Image 1: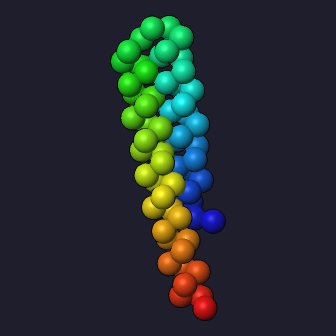
Image 2: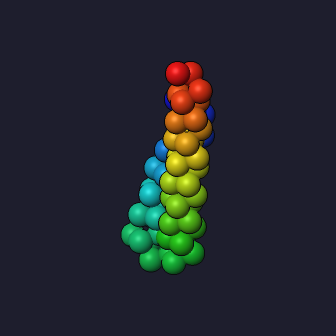
Length: 60
């Protein structure tokens, strides 16, 4: 498993928590930051998946 997938998943979780805290406290800035961090984590996770797929394709 690629490091980007692990880091991306962690970033998604962190962003989800931050987004939830922002919703609970009514802090739109924290909520938006969490949402952005979650989206960045999804992208990073997808990049890691592509790297894994490319690595697997070359192993065959």
